[in-house]
Amino acid sequence: MSIYDKLAELNITLPAVAVPAAAYVPFVQTGNLVFLSGHIAKKDGKVWVGQFGKNISTEEGKLAARAIAIDLLGTLHAAVGDLNRVKRIVKLMSLVNSTGDFTEQHLVTNGASELIGQVFGAEKGAHARSAFGVAQIPMGACVEIELIAELA
Image (cartoon, rainbow, N blue to C red):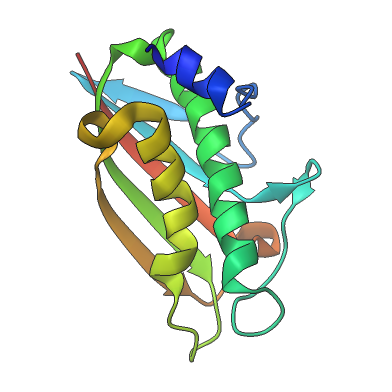
């Protein structure tokens, strides 16, 4: 089954690449690696604002992280032209807007990791990962995630 068949099965339509909000590019390829800039959570086309431990739940965060993963896949598709060229998802780095006593950043980030695993399968989709709690993310977003992929 191709990546696109899997996306269709999951009822996922890849979005267009978002216009950068500052002085950076959405992706950079060097050799066989593609680095995607951080993508922030959006809900209904607007920044998904919130701070974990204050006004957003871990379960909502998983949905936000999943939504980011879909946006990341759209950018990755734009970067490489064909997601079937992806040999492996190498790493995700997740920044979770949270209070000092919130400790479930890893569970929030699972929303993205689980979707990546579903789309790319156990071998290609298994990735290294970091999940950090941070005091704030641009525009008040609840989560920001970046991705590194290896191409065949």
